[in-house]
Length: 199
Image: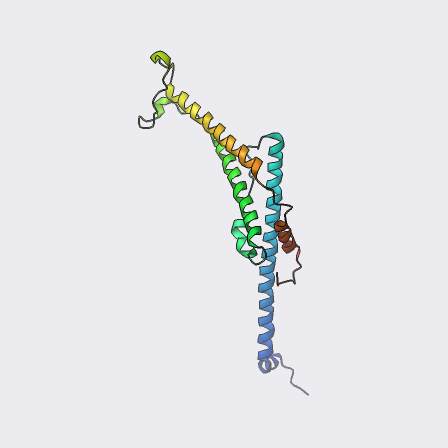
């Protein structure tokens, strides 16, 4: 009767066991890598969809909620390296340009929000090195009250209008990419099955 002791069998078949364990480890590594790439592609597609919807709403209403974030996360710039073999240069450029412009829109929204919520600092709390010269009135008349506070208000309003003008310009000119072949390729990657390791 053959000796079926497990340790003896493992000792006699150590090469086979090593091969099976190594193969399983490689399978898990490839599956993990594939899942991460698929999840990243899916997240990028969803970020683009969300950003475009926010921009479309702005084009209709001419207003972003000051609390809104166009790109809550920036998965494209974090994971662009995963897709260099799946996308050509023009695809990468199209998506990168969209993300850069959408990110800039987010910066402008934050800037406008900061300017809108900034509190006026009384003149006596501003050091002499920070105090701008008072505005000149016709016939050398003096400004009543605190010219520094007035100037700060003018600067804030002017800054808000300038940021708003930039926001309008970028929001109107940004090119949508959700329905382009570049994003279709990302959708294909996101939809691949777990066993399709070659993508």
